[in-house]
Length: 266
Length: 318
Image 1 (cartoon, each protein chain N blue to C red):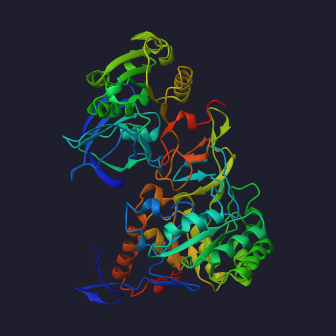
Image 2: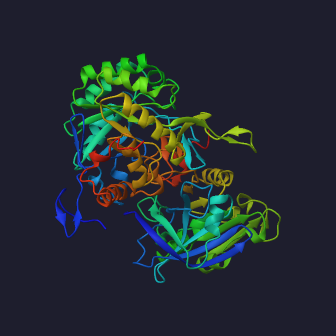
Image 3: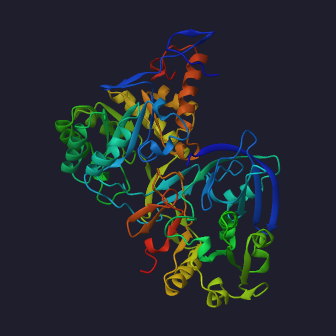
């Protein structure tokens, strides 16, 4: 997929909860390029004196009709804070789309006609790419099931958007919404049988989801990994994950990996 | 505004300056190169610009044998720069010759291989194998990478060690030999002179500066190797100073690098004595930096009524 360097314009900024900001951006010059769920953008941070490198942020949603791309920003450091404090009308330089994407077809992939049951498990800001993924799956005739977890009810983001796309289950650590506890303890994992699992969130959560998938009859499980990146295009080899085939770049050969290829069990 | 045209020919009031330079036997259409390890094999950046416009593309560090590199984390952002400890991850020179070379040999510019090693014989053997590749007109010898425990550091920090590896490679390599110098030395001009005497056609400097970053909250280093190589604008003043010192000390052309983010930075290196420059870390911030720098150098030369880039090499007024 061809990559672009674009000066995007902020058309909407929503403070979702405390440190979470949703940015909706448009390309004023042309139609946005085609992007796939799981891919990310390298966003240049201009308004922070302490930030030098771009910030890799996953694509939250693409609205081709409105020519909008959405990014969910968790303001956690100086760089992401500067991004989260952008205002409507500001310009944001983005390199996109980067990385591989979640599997949505192929010989191994369950068919709609086979009553496929696809589970999308997200934690915290890691729920971001699952919105785009769910909507693309829905377009293809699937009925995605979301299982989203967070610390508190307020940390569960974009629930209205998710519920428009598919069935939604939630957990919170404090019990303020959905079942109390972690996503891997949610009752839906026991009551339903899934044929494919996607996950994005904190690494311990994804590892627990991978362990569940393996134990529940080796359900194929894809995870989107996070990593500190410099180039974002596979040139600098900084953001490696150790896999069964050696070091792989999360930015180019990921961020989506099948958990069978990772060394998480060791 | 950029005007297309041949050097020296006037187009509607604009004169295209002569940007071509010669490094050893290497003819370059302009003095802008990419720094090894920051530009992959060039192919990663094809979507962003016409990479054949770049004067020379120095590809990833290549060693005699496969190297898996250092464990994660390999990178830490620092004020105006970054530390890296990649550890020369590459699949070895045989893999390069068989699988990478066919993919890059058609790129219409100078494709240069950065060669590294942990023993003199490995450097020589790697260089000898690359010597036979028709479309690789030069190599850059990395005698300075600070990341590798058993790597090039030992060669690059002494005049004797540097000369030893350069002599060994010179015996088996007859194309343009560039030697990349380490800044982690007391007297870089002395090393440069030793490398020149051993047969180098050019020196490039500076490689990364040895640095360190700590996570105070966790009381742990930010890199798996504790220390790593610092690059980016943070190192530019040191790089300029070293280029200036080395350019005065040697007769061979000097290639300057270290924190160049734009054409103005590049001009500063020419004024300090560099005949060509390399763009490294800037590729991560703006993947199209190289072509912008080429255009910007041309604009500077036009604006100051120079007809060629050679006129400003070492033209610092004291």
